[in-house]
Amino acid sequence: MDHDKNINLLEVRIQKLIETMRPSVHMRDELDIGYSFRNNTLELFEIRPRWDKKDKKINSPFAKTKFIKSRGIWQIYWLRANGKWVSYNPNPEVNDIVGFFEIVKEDKHSCFFG
Image 1 (tube, rainbow, N blue to C red):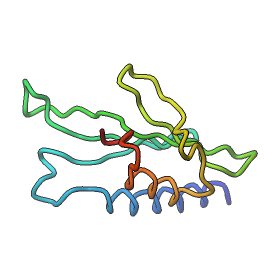
Image 2 (image 1 turned 135 degrees about the horizontal axis):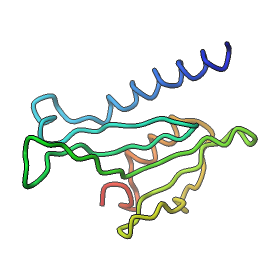
Image 3 (image 1 turned 180 degrees about the vertical axis):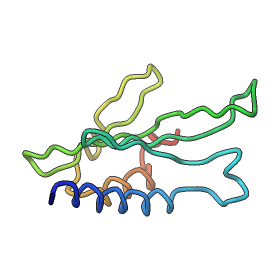
Image 4 (image 1 turned 45 degrees about the horizontal axis):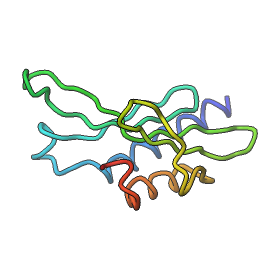
């Protein structure tokens, strides 16, 4: 029961952090930020209309973190142009999910947003 409660609290926290990254409401039809959270892995993605079919949306992942329970840390990854996830070497791990969002938003080395 505690495990489920912790997951729900984490999901609420993730939703709040995602809200801080989303563009203004009037822009969300053209660009938005979404996420998936499964098996201790959080993936962030951009949501945009397809170039050839504006009524269809595509999700383009740009950042990922995985919780390593045995170490109590979150490993950070970015998506290379070749489609492979690579450890974010300037800061490969953080102690909490907030740290992950801070690194992604800062994007000091232009790995997440180009």
